[in-house]
Image (cartoon, rainbow, N blue to C red; front, side, top):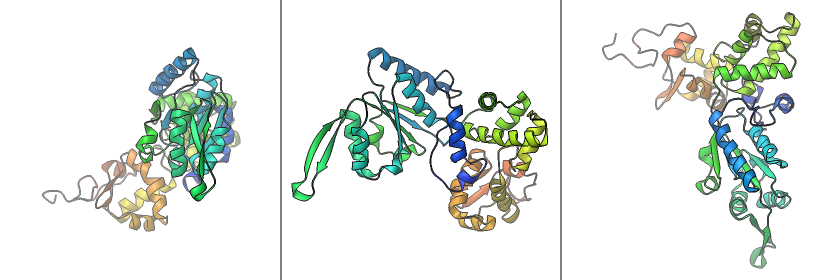
Length: 357
C-alpha cells in the first residue's frame, strides 16, 4: 500500500476518483501505510533498487544517498520516504516546497536536523529559487551560508550541517532544474499500478479495515481505480459503506458494481466530469477537433479544470487526443459511450476520409 499525501486542494481533491488526498484520505492512509519494503506492494524495480541503496548505506554505517521520487499523486512517494527512514532507523521531518518561500525557512529546517535524519520535501519543484540555491550546497557539502545583515555590511556565516538524507518528491520532474536533479544519488519514477497489483492493495486494506471482500469484489474495485492505490482505497471505503447499509457487509462483485454505479464511477474509472467531457466532444462536436475553451464552456467547467483534472486520464486511457487543431475523440471513446462515429470520419477523429466515404 502506498500513497503520498500532497496537500493541494481543488477540483481533483473533491472527486471520488481524484488522486489528491483530502483530510479523510490522510487519516486513513496513516493507518494503512506499510512499515517496510517487504510490505510495500507494486513498484518492483523501484523497491529492488532502493533496497540495494539502503542496505549498502547501512553496511557502510553511513547516511543513505539523497533520493528523488517522481510520479503522479497517490502512487506512494510519501510512503516510501517513511520506509526509507524506518529502514535506516532514523527520524523523519516532513515539509513541502510551497511551504519554503524564503532561504531562511530552509536554513531553519536544515540547522535543526539530527545526524542521519531523513528530510522529506514534497512537491520539491515548487520551492522558491533562493531556497533551491541554498539546497544545492546543503545536499553536496552539508553546509549552508547564513546571511546576516543587509546591504554592503551583510556577512555570510558558514553553518555546518550533520549528514542527512533528503527525499524529494515531485509530480512534475521536468520542472526541476538540472543542478538540483543531479545532486540526487538515486532517482526513481513511480509507475501506475497494474490491476493485479491493485487487487492486492484492496485485499490488504480490506483486511486492515476489517472488511469482508470476495476476490471478484476486489477485482471490480481495482479495475476502476485508475492505476492508483489511493483511489482504490477510497473506492473501497465507499463500497464498504454501501455494503453495510444495503447488504450484509460482504463486498461481492455485484455489490461493488452497484455501489460504484451510485457514485457514478464506471467500468474504466471515468466519473461524471470525464463522461461529460467525452459526451460533449462526441455529441455536440462530432468527435472534434474542438478548442479547449469551447469544450470547457460546453461542460460548464473552468478551462483549467478540464485541462488539468479531466484530460490527463482521458488521454492516458486513449479516449481523447490533444492535437494542434484542438481536442479529438478516439475510436475507443465512441465505443466506450456506445455511440457510432459519424459517417465520413476516420474513427471519430474529425478528419475526412481520403475519398469522402
